[in-house]
Image 1 (cartoon, rainbow, N blue to C red):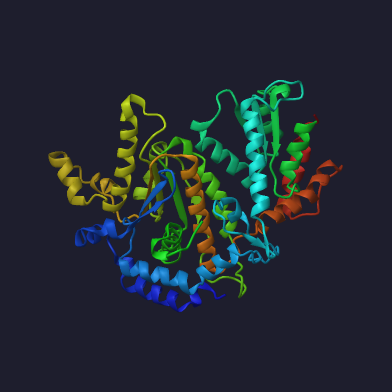
Image 2: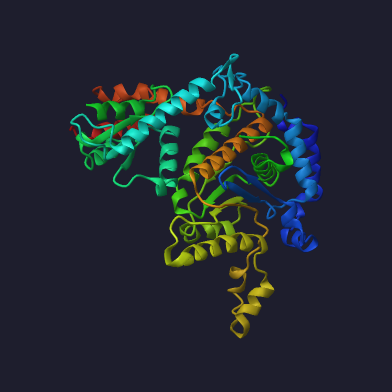
Length: 473
């Protein structure tokens, strides 16, 4: 295990950036190579028409750049770490745990080991039980306590126990059973639960308490209230390609964020889910080997579905002072072909246009030509787009359960590869613990009489302001 910037391949990549990479212009690269799209796009073909296209040709790279990036992944021993993960090594060393989310994605007969034992039989048994139970709820066979069929399901969880279920429920809404409504409660703020309970009938409501440890205060508090894939050949591997491109922009161009922009309303919670997944996994400054890292690690992940986002923050992406690499996602086929598919054509026209606009931009000469005799000199600079802003375009046939699963696995493994290259442990979340520990100290202080003086002046002032102004319920 070596810090990323100590790798020989990293030094070569730095030299490439300093001499060539930072001056590359995508428009010129496309003009110089008519086959650039064919060279810099890959298809993943799964079962049941589950094909995903990754077009990464609109990135500030050459084939040489890509080779150097993949050399970094190779020297960082991504393949070795992948093998250790799949064979049950406790690569989450701070918690002495194997990393077993891959077992839930494993549809093959390949064993997944933990301490030498294959966990797949138990995983399959649990998954089969989940399917049997969910089918019985959907069919009406499983009933509430008064014998009535379930009409509402309330999921109580936080973090991954909320964002994941919300994202999947929204993404697969086209497959939902009519009349069975899903609700999600995550906030410790009692309003979240209270507003949900106003809309459901206890006789026909099923509560699901989702937690890994059943020690998370927000989840347990809400529950109590409610009661009362990867790396075969790196050059053709989608998550590896996405990971090294992210390294390129994060560590060499200084990009601090990445936007996820799905052009499918069903995927509107996909960015939030991977905001949590990426930032909780790779938001670390301590390395696995040599103390503090010496490179920038996890980027800020954010995004919204288009075309709403186009009228929200695309202005900054197109003409702002920050480089924001973007992943655009869109289905070829919609679940809702309104007006004979015309609306989907309009949506996809915007999808194609945005990545082209971000790449080519608009020159001052083009602006003047458009304005013609009506040119107003002071307006011209405001209509210029510099372009050369990087994007990935991800297309798939239709948003099905299989496709969604593939997209989830793709982004999960991208996070894993980047964590290996940065030499950090992507599988613990100690960053969420300190605030929770301090909250447990502060909570009893709120019930005590008199001012609080045990914290810094700011925290004392905030607590005492709250205590002096709150009402008794």
